[in-house]
Length: 216
Image (cartoon, rainbow, N blue to C red; front, side):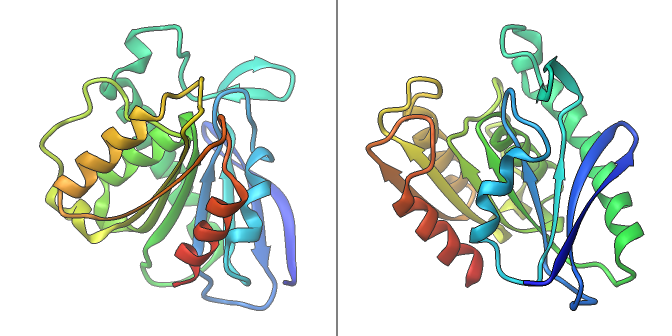
């Protein structure tokens, strides 16, 4: 795949962009890292994304240490609440759309999301708030924020979801995946669940299934 990598800034976020050279109307994927990651962390999942796609990877604006960032402080109870995530998700959504408009001059098209761990939580909130803007959402080793609304926006049933979680995950308990699956299925959404006997990571089998999910 012919592409070019560069960085962009749209208040208040830094973005890593992988833009194909040969597609003027590419599919768009937004990859959101987890706690202590950065805009480069999610590059390990680029192999699952169809060729000639536009890939945008934001950096969380909570700095932990050198080259390590997050979206919320997991030790702060208030920041673990849905309402706190919602404010972050709205800002990120607006900044990402501005980046996309700068990169491609095209009519509206739906986006795809891939989130890992804390980034998965951001993705779930984005899907809840703006379901009409998303086609596929992959939730990897993730969880729902506290007090996530039990009455889900009906539009979320138009999104296809992929959930991957390790049954041996000691950081985000496997039960969190079952909770997400139940809420999404209860809303009428199409959900694919991939589980493996691994810890806080995505297994090779689930990577293969993610690739198939995104290619359909």
